[in-house]
Each structure stands twice: as structure tokens, then as C-alpha cells.
Image (tube, rainbow, N blue to C red; front, side, top):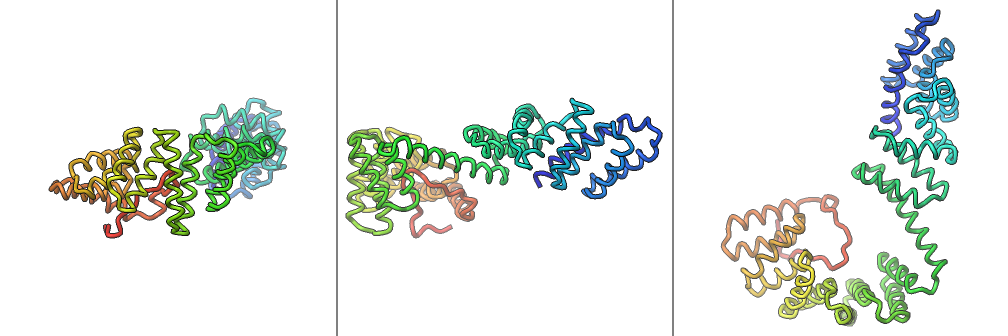
Length: 398
């Protein structure tokens, strides 16, 4: 667990220092050695109650040894006895102000008790200065917690970004960061609602939120409110088209599809380089069987944005559907170079290579497709995209 891993690092630092403390020179040196040896063995084995008893005896025999109190603080922290940890660590730091890591662990103990104002300075210091990765990780999580409790939300996000950079594959970090980001987004939206209740920004934010929830009727009303306030606002006709496409997937209404096409065309009229709008018109035409018009709009998207993988796949597909195999090939090769985990691109590339008689290249593309197609949905890292995704032909089979 998080706490146990970090505390183990602290134990090694503190208990090794403790064995060289002044207690060895006292009258009860034999007892001290016995309690020290037994206590450290219990610590390393995770027998914290036993370790606590031994180090409490050591504290009685050698009350002036800072490392004994510090190690007791570690044990109390590990046991969740945070009040006792605070007292022991403060005692240790009073005896030896520069004791390594003790101030950081004291701050974490204070944070666990909800005493965030007291904890904050040393949490910040520990997080910024430590080179010990587990300590960095734990102090960062505690610092996120303290900042959030103190309503220092921007600082919490900054820590979350740094933790994500350092520990981006750690599930616990991801869980807490998701909450930090979500909280900050919510607070920002609430502030927007207060500061600009009738602004285009408020209507657009509301529209995007409703669209993400699948409430296309509400989203359409809000996008239209944006255009009512700012008729030439860039990107809004495109968003209207996307919301209409979303509704069409439920209603299958030809009117929704045609209205979506018109909104994408309106976007292109004001912004001829909007590759997303051109792509969506191309995809509507492709699905309706008009390959000539589909090719024209896919070419428009690729011309303005050559690194647009979906457009490259779409163009390669419509060219292949017209048996223009040599022309289709470079677009599909570009698509798999841009997005190597795109199974649709690999499948369509395998079809083109087969038509061209390139047996070895067909096999390589088909092998890549089969490997990707066999992965679970979780492994495929499916994420929402800003445009309609290309999909496999119904007949495609691994």
C-alpha cells in the first residue's frame, strides 16, 4: 500500500541512524541493544504492535535519543495513530532539528489529522525538495489533499500535473488526479455561470456539457443561442453538426443527417480550412454511396491537414472503392504511420495490398489488424474523438 511503502523508506533512514545514537553509551546498553534489535526486526517484518512496544521501552531507557522518537513516530504513523505520531516526531525534531525526513512525516501526520494549515509548509518543502520517489509520491498526494481542503484549487491542479508527469501509470495517482481535475473543472464552470450568465461562453460551455451527456436537444438549443449572440462564431456550426449527427444515430432521421450536412457546409463557408467539417461531409457522402463527392471532401480535409488520420483512412477507402488501388495506397500507409494502433486503417491497407498483388505487405498489414482486433476494448484505449471514427466493414473478420 501507499503508506506502507513510503514508511519503509523512512524506517531505513531513521532506524539506521538510531543505532549510532547516544543510548549505546548509557548504563542500560545491553537492554538498549536488545530492544533495538528486536524492534527493528519487528519493523522489517511488519509487526508494528511489537515494534511499538520495543521502541517505547527504548524511549524510556534513552529519552534523549532523537532517532528513537522519530522511529516511534514512523510506527505510530503506520498504525494510523496520528496524534501520537505528531507528538513523537515533534519530540525528535526538538532533540535534533535537522533529523532527515522527520519534518516531512510530521507534515503528513498533521495532514491526516486535517490540520492542513500546519502541515502545508513542510508538505510543500518535502514535495519540492525530496529526490526519494516514494516520498515524493506520498507527499504529493497529501499536498493535493491539503490544497483542496484549503480551497487552493489551482495549486492542487499544479501538483496533480506534476504527479501525473512522474507517476502517470499509477492507478492511485490517476484516481486522485481525476477528482482534482473534475473538481477544478466544476468550480471553473460555476465561476463562469456567475461571471457571465448570458455570455456566449456560458451557452457554449453548457452546450458542450449537454452534448457530452447525450442530451442533443438541449445542446442544439444552446449552440443556437451562441449563434444568436455571435452569428459568426468560429466552430459553432461544426458543433451543431456534430450534435445533429449524435441525434441522428438515435433517430435515424434523414432530416437530421441533411441538417448536419448543412451545418458542416456553413462551417466550411466561413472557414475553408476546417478539416473536421470537410471530413464529416465526406463521411456522410461515403456512407450514402456518393464516392465522388466523398473523395472531394476527404481530399479537402487532407490537403489542409495532411496529418489527419481519419481523413487519410476515409480518402484511401473511397479511392479503393473505385478500384484506384495505387492512389489509395499512400493514404492508408500514411494513416498507419500516424496511428499504428488503428485496426481499421490496417484492415483497409491489407485489402489494397492484396488488390495490388503485394503478398508480403498484405500479410504484414493483416497480421497487424488481427493483433489489434483481438485486443479487449480496455486494451484498445477507446477515447472520444472530435470527428466520426472510421469503422470496420461488416464483412471484416480476423
